[in-house]
Length: 471
Image (tube, rainbow, N blue to C red; front, side, top):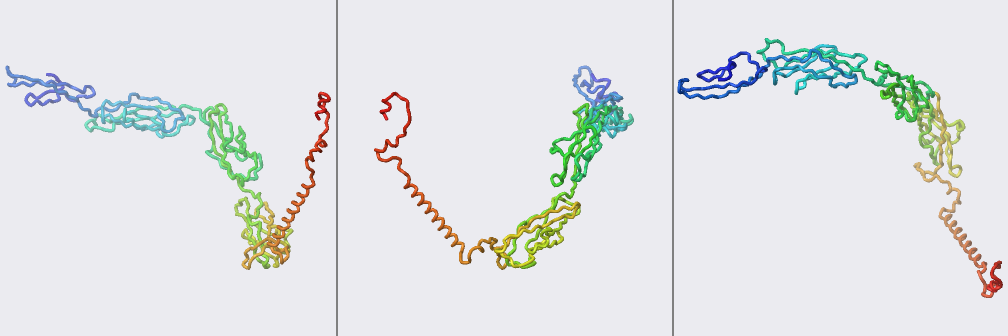
């Protein structure tokens, strides 16, 4: 009863068939078919009934994608980071579901290596993104040839050709005011520590990469050079010393140099200048330890009493080498001699025997030390040698000579007792003198009859005789 001429029904079997070929879902998707059934072969007096059949056409991939524009115009700032979205394109496909799924690709153009494209799985847009950093000054525009292709093809429709489409995308790069650009990502300098103040050690260079090519000004970030060892000339970029360097104090200086556009101070670039201070032999060596030692009274001639070493804050490339000797004024010292072991150590040896604390308790030995660098640095250190009483194994018992100045029959205990007695005697004498002084002092007042003799006379102007009689 309804649905012709698109569908028909077999009068005997009731099978519903398509009556027209090449039906198009994209033109019409849903149909309603009303079917009537009669008994008695449709003769007069027979009964009839109807039913409704709703038919929906399923989709097949019979439509190729088509871009809605033959040419897309897009722009992107040169400062856009990698991964930034430049724009979106869309190839429309009248099919639905998997039959409309799309893959976009850049198949040609001078921007194939600079840009990338991907497919948004939700709305099937082609999203163009930045693949490499952009630079307006080197290339202000790009052209891309983009293809959109169905990912699922129906072999029944291959005769209709390739299910893809092509469009052109023109991308313009916008100029952005960029910070200055240094000619090197970092600088390294080696500088002797005796470099004179005012010496130019390096000239850094930065330029404005923009087409305007603004003038650049230089400065040092003060937090990187708080003690102000260096200064940079504001226009030339010449870095120079303004203080004496000392490797032993600071071996490395890591300076941050800033470059700023004069017309736009917000555009600032920075670079690190690493300065290694090279060593110069400017410090004398000196004895490291053991500036005081001892010699036993029973020591013999040629006996080792001390091994000395030296230290030097300098750090020569060939390693440190020290030379030892007695100072010139002690070269013929009758008591001690010095032997340089040629291994940065020296021995102090006795020249004689027969040591005695009663003769002399302390000796002072000047030791001369020099290094092997140029210019040669020298120093003289005084080694104190005490004469000590030792046991037969060389262990020190005492280095004091007081006991030898007392009579042999008088011990230390006796001496202490004598001193205590003298102290007690002095205290008693002082006490007696104090009591005697108290006895000689007069009383504050005598008997009652002598009171008037102690009245102090003074003048007072008052009321006449009555006041005088009061006294």
